[in-house]
Length: 367
Image 1 (spheres, helix red, strand yellow):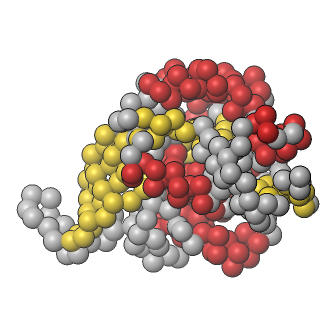
Image 2: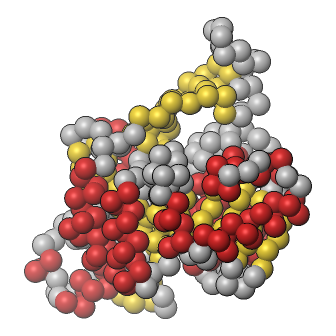
Image 3: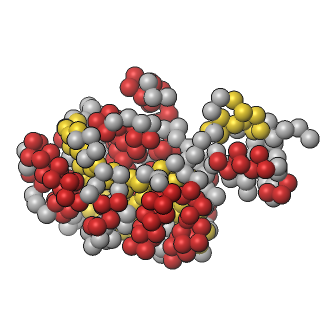
């Protein structure tokens, strides 16, 4: 029988079309190579498909379906507003998984998803980007959440309501199989507002396997009640309004040098490896407790379309830089660029991200 895979530099390439096969039909080497590269053995393999030959970043988080209303004139919350309404794929974890895949990082996404037409649509979109969906738990209902958002005439968020998923199935999966998934990964990108049991279990396993953990907040329901979690993270990224709550001061209205000083004190006090606070159109500030490097990063000029997903994009770009071994200062540049490109897109992610990074001089040096 013709060999199934061919190794080329840092990738494996599928040599022939095969239907989904039970593992006993593959030799041990093929199983090892395919699983390590994030290939879903339960779906057909197509001739010419290429997968990176190194451990994936494991994203653990949520899928949401976002219902977004865009005002075409001045938005007035107490009256009727004319505009457009769109349904788009969202969720902190899902956005990050798509971004990392578009940034050419092998990615495994651990989540729960509804076994419905729209749930399958979400999965199929990620599969096309070669995100490993093998560890997504199907649910009859509430496997994923919904987010209702209203954006004003400037594209700024004017109000929102979230319906969170039921985390029962995800928690059961993390407890029973999380060790294997985390052990096969290089880094962990963790949405921190799942349940405290999920977060603690992931942290415990990641520490045991010596995997770096990068944390991002969701709705703040968990992390604000359990700030001790921060001391286990290699990097934590949040926005200035969230920083107001974590640092327990009016961080938003401080001068930049005061923001950096406050950030340094908080990181050292909490035991964090590093932290970045995004400041919207004013840029971001950062501090790495290991190298003692701190600073300010301005934004790059962009044409604002929709700010939704910008924070997830910033996190994704920064994580990509850290995974590539960049110092935090340069990783934040990656995050700033990815966030800017996402703001120019009407979706929660930038579908043109692969083209953008190919055209960008800073990113070309990393690829």
